[in-house]
Amino acid sequence: MGRHWGSWRRGKKRKIKKISHKSRRARRHVLKKLGRLGNKIGKAGELRVLGACALGNMPLWWLGIRPATPEEDTTQETDAVIFTDTGEIPIQIKSSLNEKTDPSLPERTGKDIAIVYVDLSESDIHIREKVMHVIEKERQAILKKSPKVDQ
Image (cartoon, rainbow, N blue to C red; front, side, top):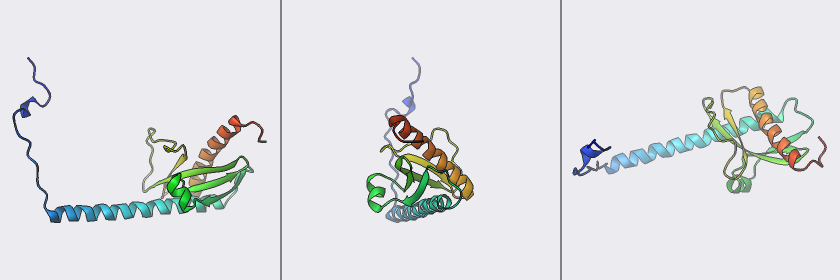
C-alpha cells in the first residue's frame, strides 16, 4: 500500500508555537501601520483620478466627475461618480504603487460597480484613458438596455 499525504505525521502531536505578548503587539502595530499606508495610497489614487479626469479634452457624452459621498462610499463601495449623457455611472478605484497586469483581476465589485485599476506612477493621460475605457463600456451597456437615449 502506498503512502498517503501526511502519513509520516500520523500519531504525532502537532506542536503549537507560542508567541509572546510583545511579538503579538509588535505584529499588530505593523499591520496597523500597513493599513494606514494602504488607506493613504487609496486616497492618493482617488485624487489622481479626479484630477486627471477634471482637466483635458473629454468626449461629448462625458459631462463631469465628482467624488463619492461618504454614504455612497460605505454602502455602495463607490469612490467616484461620472456624469454622462446616459446618467450617473459609479466607479470604484483600486490604487497601487506598481502596475497590476493580472488578467484575473475582477472588472466589477460584488455590488456590480465597475473597477478602475490605477498605478500611482502613471501619467494623468494614461489614467484618463483607463477611466474613459471603463466608462465607455458601462455607457454602451446602458445604451443596449435602453435604446431610447441618443448616442
